[in-house]
Image 1 (cartoon, helix red, strand yellow):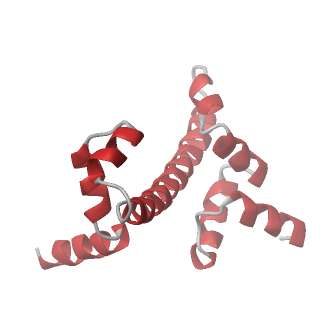
Image 2 (image 1 turned 180 degrees about the vertical axis):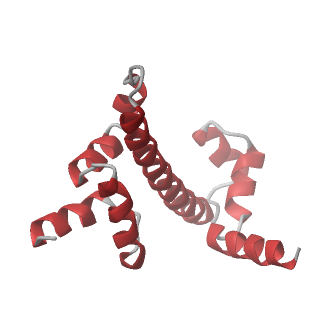
Length: 137
């Protein structure tokens, strides 16, 4: 893979760590997807894919779309996790200066939602704990 192509994939897959990126690129390219395809799907959050319906007998297009939508899901999960972590940090800092009720009113959410977000642990810790528990079964 050329340096330009490699850079394009790195830019298109910001949610993938370097160790996993090669396998992901292999999976995407095996169905004919390019870094530009991935970038376009991430840019419009899959709207174009959802509007496009494959015609009868277009199983290759369906497989391509399915692979791309799986990667979009992974990207969105990554984005949600980052947003939640940043939100927890912001709430924690804000709650040092304002009350839960005041912050909830400004945000347009319940006091319980603010409290739950502010006191929840790191999602990676929760995920690791869940994995450990599932291994015990």
